[in-house]
Length: 622
Image (cartoon, rainbow, N blue to C red; front, side, top):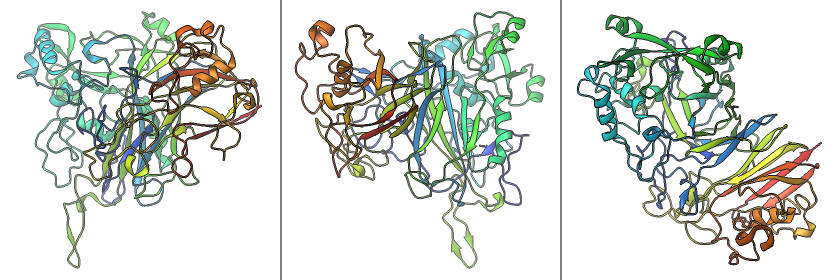
């Protein structure tokens, strides 16, 4: 957030610059635990990530993060459903090292998402990639003289399909060419260039993926971005009206077209303000945030009648500057942050994980989306800016530990790519997504990640609501060398490096043995009823078949060969007791809640009394 420091030493939000300085001292990491945060990991067998610059600048410890999910030999994108008649809820969970609302720092957590239609977008497709290397980048020698063909050749020589991609090439190309905001606080840091890739936190202009450092360090940003605001959790509710207004307001960019093609946008433009833009022949265009383009609506009157906005979409591709019908996003959800203490990666005050209940947006088109979730942890200090210098001496001859590019600071984590789909069956009620967080190893070996648990660990729902049970795991969580500044190892049941989870009903929350099917009360007694399964089959399957699918982590689909053929327990090679042959990820079962009650579940492989608890409590009320 761009909260500039006043001479009185207080950080104030100013709508003139529409931002708040993302400030913090020390190593104040943030780690996203659900959906699985990457911390720039991909599929490393080591405890430490291979490339801290792969996709984005996290400024977190190298040991953080989870590997991308797998299903068989392929990567696995978790899928979440939107479009229910009620709220479609996804619990976003994280830990942050230096706390919030404990009086020792100002803080915000900014939650954003970036989505695109699931249909392929070529080199611009959001992807995890198969390589831990950073995408390449070649700047144009003379950007304003560039042709469309030379731009496409430069892009093709820079970006490759094998490497991960979040922000598109055009986004960084524009950032690299655009003059930085000269009004921002830089302390005594000597920035090595004049473009927006140089900031107080990134004075050398180091590139991480195609992230724009200036946009990363400041929120709300004053130019259009590919990110969609979801929520801001703050220690100061008084700033919420200004933040909500800024999130919905248009932002501007200087627009020019290619020299030999007057219809398509040139991205590498140096001007960052209306005066210079107009002076040099550009147009300072207003861009509004939008969820998607309503492509079936082709005129302003019809667009306005639907409550949408007729405006030029901010698209990172060689698009013309023609207006379209834009579906507005949900308004920014600005609320009070949970209270956590500093020097601690753990739960909030009162217990339970630090979490935000994200109500997934509804895409009117019904199109499936490919998305990434982003968390930024913005810490501020109340020190006057003129006092922020590198390791200053103060009376009586005492040296302070001050790093002037870290007092204030932003930390970040992002999810791996996931998908949003319209719910495949009619759901008139709330829809709750239930998954697994954590990875293989004991509490020391996985730190600063966490051990296995279901999420939400305790869920309250109502009769008529739906649950989507799904989880993601990896076959490469060995936590081996190099282990950075922590312990290597992957203690746990089953084959080394493998994540496996399953779900079996227990009789009591304190029990560590599952109930026999005949004594269970959830699926067996009709409290929960399967209405959709990842394999597409409901006909011919009984409740006990869905119970078997959950208990076997999806290895079996049913008991009898007559019901599901080669995927039946009757026909398939028997599953080993520790689930080694089961898939690392479970693609999902949608269940309707038909009866009130309290139901307890365990994971038979990972739950290990006095070592780790992998349990789930579901409470259903009328």
